[in-house]
Every structure is written in structure tokens, then in C-alpha cells.
Image (cartoon, rainbow, N blue to C red; front, top):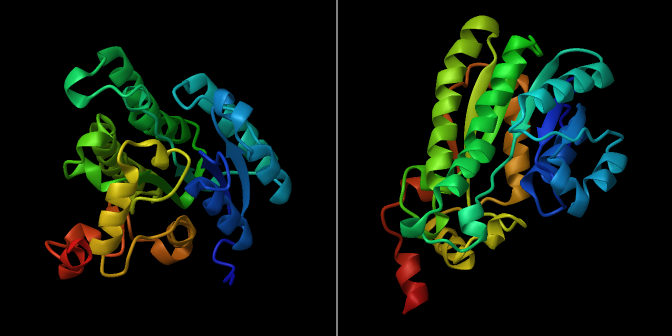
Amino acid sequence: MAYNLLKGKKGIVFGALDDQSIAWKVAERCVEEGARITLTNAPVALRFGKIQALAEQLNSIVIPADATSVEDLENLIDESMAYLGGQLDFVLHAIGMSLNVRKGRAYTDIKYDWMQKTFDISALSFHKLMQTLYQKDAMSEEGSIVALTYIAAQRVFPDYNEMAESKALLESFARSFGYHYGKKKKVRVNTISQSPTWTTAGSGVKGFKTFFDYADTMSPLGNATAEECADYCAVMFSDLSKKVTMQNLFHDGGFSLMGINTAFFNETE
């Protein structure tokens, strides 16, 4: 059901790969709520993803951009504003990748050049994006920027590897840049800490099913789905959240505040 929450708004959605990705669902939800958007992903991701089909479905365009490249981000923002006809009202950063995770390197046997690449893609790209938006004055007054994160930024999930530090840095950038953007243009910057979600990227993490099931059992409301995360993002992009900024917002069915849930022990007996 649509509520016209984003009627007349314009935005960029990063990270849609296929119909399993959260960014894909966010893009669909934003358009359903009345927004016009551009889509973007890294050129390498465009070769094996299905984002062009999404663009056709949503009457949008795809603008390739390597989020670690300021030059690419400048081009993306310029082209998006030209296509959409003005400043942006919202941006979703849904980017994360670890070579150490992909290659099966243990946290105690990290390749540091891979770790630096992880930080650049998964966290520094967020600062580069916001700085480019800021310097180009690309965001409208009271706009909203959201990045997706995970509770491993605060707790230990051994197989999440250095992505945990990446998410911690991402959340810190949201707080620090949120201050500056709020003072300048009342732009809000927040992160959404989502439940484990069955996406192409997420399911590639070692032991993913185990902690997906664990979180689902521990959470009184169960894990939040990609579609539900899209709903939350739409609210955060809307005028209903004008005074919410610099926050890490847990969207996890209550998992983040749980100490113990007897349901978990009942299932393991």
C-alpha cells in the first residue's frame, strides 16, 4: 500500500544488484511512494547484475559509478541532477564488500591490502559520497541520506571479519558528517542496522544461515525482511523524520536489545 510519502522527491539508490538485494526493494518502494530516482552500481557489478531490468521497470536510468572514485561520484551526481531536474532529496548508500571474506581469509590471517580495499569500498565511499554531495550543494534543504549497516559494528561476529570495522567506521561517518550537513542545510544522515537478510551478498558470508536463524529466534518480532527495510528507508527519506539525524537505527525485530530468549533454548533442546 502506498501513502505518497515521497511524492515529488528525487534521489539516488546505490547498490541494487538483483531482486534479492535490499537496495532493489528500496528503489521499488521509493518509486511506489511517488519518488523519481536514478540507480547506480560499480561497473563490474553491472556486468552480472540485473539492474537494467529494474531501471526499465521503474522508468529510471542506470549511471555506472565506482563509489571509491570521487571523479565517478561527481559525474553520477551531475548526471542524476540533470536527469531528475534539480537537487536531490534522498540518497541510499547500500555498499559493502570484503575480499578477505570472499577469499576465505580468517580474521587472524588478514591480507592488509585487501582490508584497505574493504574499508575504501564499504566505509570511505560513504564519506566520499557525502563530501561530494556537500561540495556540489547537491542535496535539497532537509534532505535525507541513509546507509545500511549491521550490528557487528558493536558486537563480535567472528566470520564477519573486517566488515565489522568497516561498519563501525561507516556509522562514525554518519554521526560526524551528520553534524556538518545538519548545520549547513538541515540534511539528515543516519544508518539503519538491519537484521541478517537473505541477499546475494549477505548469504555469501560464512555461517550466514546459522546467525540468520539465531537472530530470527532471539528477536521477539523475528528478522526484518528486505521489503520491511525498504519501508523503513522510505519513512527516513520522507518528511516524517525531519528531526532524526546522526542515529544508528536498529531495524532488527528487537534483537539488538535482547539478552536471552527462552525460545532459543526450546528450539535447541
